[in-house]
Image (cartoon, rainbow, N blue to C red):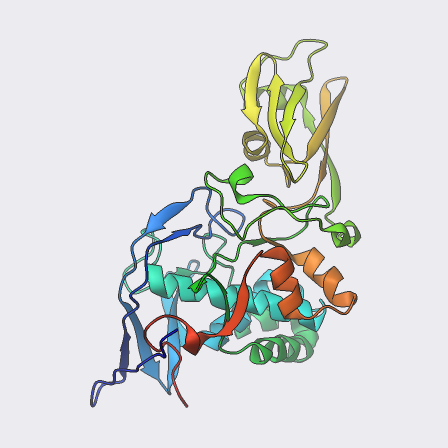
Length: 338
């Protein structure tokens, strides 16, 4: 790959970076960390501002309705702290740092959500990646703040300047909380297949407190949300399952749904579900938490406990990828030199 070449503008603290890369099929984060539809996005010119010799990220703070600008590595730390429990193994936290950094590099390359205000690269919600500031983390963690943030910063620093690529392009590093024992093929949840987002076994997730859940909904509410009328004996028939053992198609009351449709309509944590009727109630049991595509966070933590490092973790959940320095990527230099 060709080395990056910085372009400096005299007397201006602005680093303009142009990335000339073929269009990449991407899954922008939205609803379960990534959106529900794959799209082709055109590469745009990336403008990374130079402030104290660091790449700046502009984050739209959804509650304050303001845009905060911060160094990329500070942003990555705020995402890791928000997205993964700080008491996870350090190698799992490093893997999460890689996904966070890879995501923002994709955003700088391919542009922000059309819903964002001008000047913002990302928002701080699940529409992109959840981000929390130091002030917010202090309120949440209290006396544990110093210990936890130092651990997060250690994980981020250990992966500084590194991203995950597939065929010389940064991946869409989809992740979720807990699997049902398997991750999901991208095409079984979204529209298109993605070569590095393939179903793999994830047995470590059984240790997650979110692995198995049960909830009760009234039969009337169940029918209303699905737009059906239940008969006395028809509680549905699963017609097909995905490679990740989630419901692919189910027929109930004469109507066919995808597993994702059922999950969305009923607000379930997973598309691996079963249910029974008890009187006027429907008792639903689910396995896993999240869409199931990409890296399982509890799976990553389980692998780390077994002695796997962050590179091994991401290469297990994202097939055929490499972890490389950011300054090896593309035809221009994104990282600022201190």
